[in-house]
Image 1 (tube, rainbow, N blue to C red):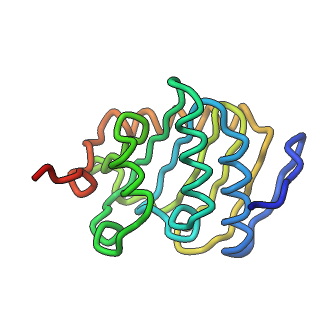
Image 2 (image 1 turned 90 degrees about the vertical axis):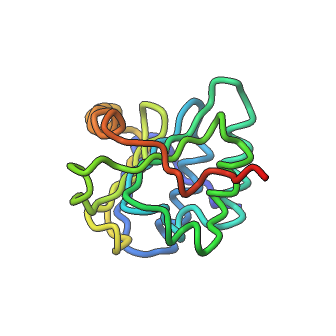
Length: 166
């Protein structure tokens, strides 16, 4: 289980995969209503591990109002490798929504994770786990949520993650 990280006036500079993974788990643990992710693809380090899937499941099943939205450019590689988040989204299809970005947003190569209206993780380059985590940043989260909502409005549900009904 993830080590507890203080959540009051805490800003952390990320500089490694392990640190990113640990902080994503702490962020998910702190979630109460909504988790939002934007990136070129579903990140393996952050979301394709047992601890994360367990925490997401616990978060999403704790209330009827909880939800998670993931906006990515493409999930074909994730699907081919059996990403655990895709399996979870198929089981909890009313709680997890995965969309593909519109054409105008495909050139963006940063990633961010937003938790409710208070905390976020941001990496300017999705291939490097260097960035920032802030557990008390309502103004920045509002700004990133606005950006996300604009992109979400131009996105489409990802057909690569749908469960095939046979």
